[in-house]
Figure 1: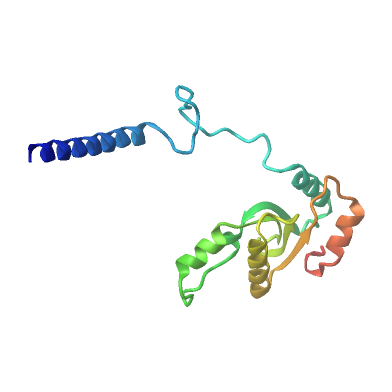
Figure 2 (figure 1 turned 45 degrees about the horizontal axis):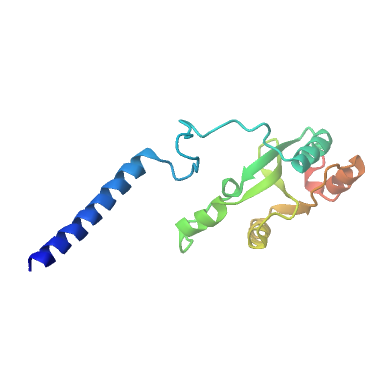
Length: 170
């Protein structure tokens, strides 16, 4: 019987020791930073060199001068910021979550900041995400187009893109 108490005490002691070690580790380490011991940073955030990729920068610089003065060009817009989820939605939290994790690469608005044209550059990572954005844009009446990602865009390509969209002609 004494052997059983000794074994039980060892198991409880080992479990308690493991639990205390986990608590100490949880306070002192950030699971996102995977630096070797002694190389932790006090603040992991740094300013990006640029917010655009090469293709995004090329597209923005080609399109910006062609936008009429009656419009504004915005970049990297959170898709949820374009939507209002109605109170009649079955699960408003799910509806917000589905839209909140997606973004529009470029958005052309009129001077009252009403969205006129959503632009998705390239193919993106997730086809389900692209389909979701396209389906919602169709439902809310926002024109959305996809433009292939390139390192250079000609003025002719940009003019052809804008010519198809009478809503933003200035």
